[in-house]
Length: 315
Image (tube, rainbow, N blue to C red; front, side, top):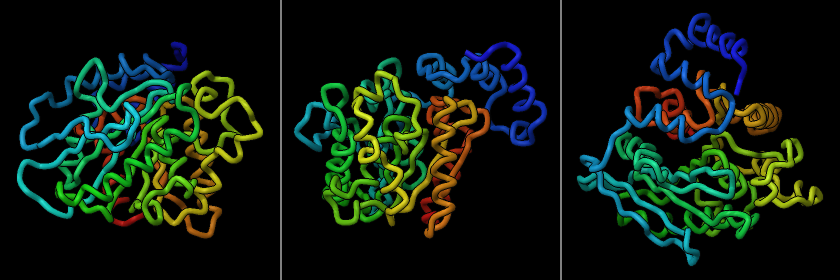
């Protein structure tokens, strides 16, 4: 938790002094409570703030196919979200949840609002939504997560046309550990099951890209990537992300854990120094590690507006 003085200083900047805060679509009481929660990952407290803002089942105008198998493992499951009315050739938004590599699911246990909220936003904004889950560490260490992402991309490429989606317009989005799995997939072509990776773009929100600069010692990260530092260069995503032709977008939150913001800055600086130009990079004002995705499908569009622009322009 941040201290009282630190909390007040941040709040003054966010709610009083900053232009972005003055124009903020975030309710003021939520902004205060996120400061009180602090720079920690607290899904329970954060979801309690956003559940009242989210839709509840049944979802009008949306068709959901749940628990579709895309691979042999027990957790190789995905849900497909489409509009009730027939449509064709919609771009596809695939979402990969977080959970610290050792936990998490495509629907939170406490409420069906998350991560259904991301799929509802996707359908509302012209996509077919695909929400996946994957194998977890320590039973399934690196590269299981990225391998599962590759298998899910192949399933979508092969099957989404019959559900109104365009298999050549797949946008892959991940959050936290899910963003790290997306980065691992994009950066390592050996995991591709579709030519060129099968993606029109990759969106990574608060992920790990360079293991050499990550503050190691955490049990979840070592459970997935291993404790042998000599393997980190091979298992890192950064080199492959700089080499890929797949369009990239990176985001993190202002109240994120510090090292996620550092990873965002690292990728922003590295891509800007490369020959392909700067990747789209977004630091979300007022948000925390969990609120950045729990706010999707509310009036706060500070993440989804850049996503829509990225989808339209490819950069």
